[in-house]
Length: 254
Image (cartoon, rainbow, N blue to C red; front, top):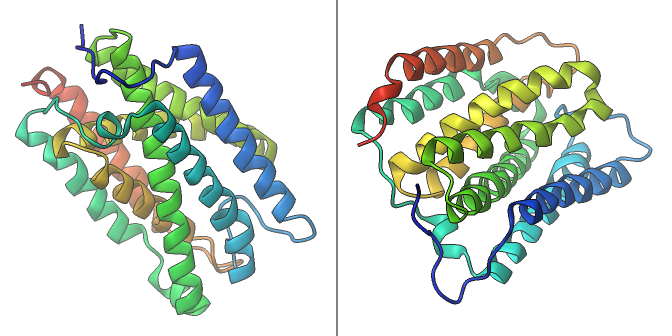
């Protein structure tokens, strides 16, 4: 069983309360994004102008990041959220390396150049908001909650990733049934971010990787009507990582 990861003086958080916090985050960011984009036609994760980036991403996710930070502060959980004292074997560094390569290949540099520097910088900032908000909520608070309740590390990895994936089922309202595929893909990606957290000893690199991963994927849709095959690199990376982890699953823990 995992040891208690929170210090004396920190607040307890039941699993049901954590799930309620996740629902609250999804609802608040979703409603703000919906209200901010009334009157404009912007597809999910496909902004094509500065105004669309600001309304659909920067504002709702920025507020979501603040809400997560307030929750961590109220719980007094900054240390267990930001740091991780359960290292894994050295070869796991292959996970972030493969993800970085996929990010570099998937990013649509020509499309971003077409949109301009201001657009690109705001999109990058917004994607980093997403990365750090979601990593703090799922690999930060989520991992800490499950560890605090005595879950084995395998179950911590499983349930924090499942909750991460299911939270994206809210996209059924914007993208339809294909959001169900996203739920599975996101859950798998969540496990890789969890491994990055443990390999690097904290939340800094997972948040950065998550943000850049989303940035590279969104970049492929910033020019309407332009086909770009770059995201195929992200799909391939997830397949390669899945095979790698399955083959070496018994050599992850120290």
